[in-house]
Image (cartoon, rainbow, N blue to C red; front, top):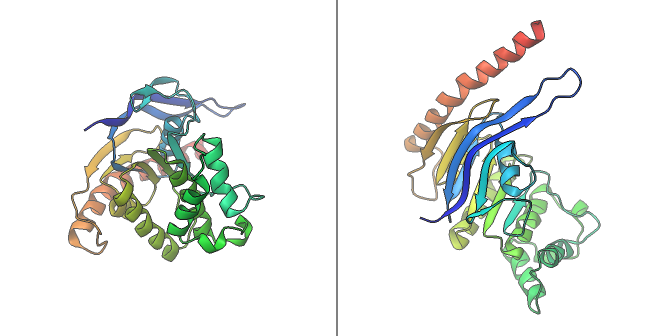
Length: 265
């Protein structure tokens, strides 16, 4: 299969301020994501998973190592990589429709039929009756639908999603997970999905990468060989969950112990 995202020996260190020590966010991380794969990267808070996504997005520059998308080195952000954040990142002064059409114009994807395409996508996302609404008048789930609609409108081959459902209630999160899975099954875009939730990773992804607490390293690669839609109550689903938690729990406890020792010192 053709590689869409290639990461080789990425290292990222954030310099400390004052007496604060430097933070090693990524420690020689390597991974390859084939075109059309739904890949979840998970791990505890502070493990470097968002830093990894930001480097692929072009928002951060690594200290060493390489990152390529579609065979080209990443030297900054670009319309070939659409990003959905946890905090929605909508323009509050723009209507729902304008948030989508502005993204199309900014990405150089505007044409005579773009407005019709934007409305078609908003209809597909269940937002056609809210085209003239502003983000402040929408629920959290609806705002995230708008954010996803923007990425679909500019037709980015790669979707980078940084805990997009993390701030939502359980019911809304479950609904959007199912909607995202349906969209992916129809479009087969390459999705790099960041989460700290094992159930979400197993439910959505073809493959799950598990990272340790800082410094971030990939310690487990797990292919999820379950038919979709997946049943979180099945023994097979929970077998994958146990395998992930068996890796995460010791590293998380080690990180907590290190913090406690630092406080004593």
